[in-house]
Image 1 (spheres, rainbow, N blue to C red):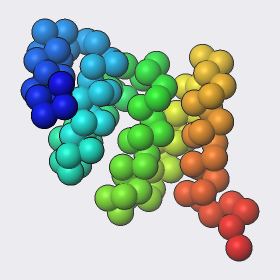
Image 2 (image 1 turned 30 degrees about the horizontal axis):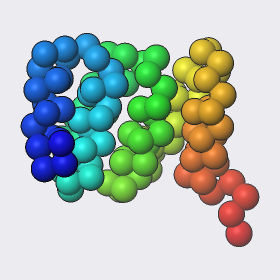
Image 3 (image 1 turned 180 degrees about the horizontal axis):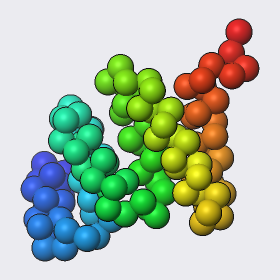
Image 4 (image 1 turned 135 degrees about the vertical axis):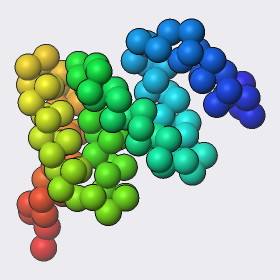
Length: 109
């Protein structure tokens, strides 16, 4: 599925647009291929439509930071921390807290 991975994921997404995992994979594939705008659209839609899919917050925050949008990155990390705390999603919570601390410059220098 290497060269056709993007097409396959797009097809899966069209068949089941509510599948968070497929949409997440599609966003990651766009990012991998150097399509940040497409990735951003999918990540933002996931956070809006399926906020309980906690893995999205970290990747969306990192993408915002990469795009020079640090305030959006921090807000995304904070929203993700809140969602993870509500769900008890400890692994994602730890990653998001670390990313937020880095974004805020806590403990640096």
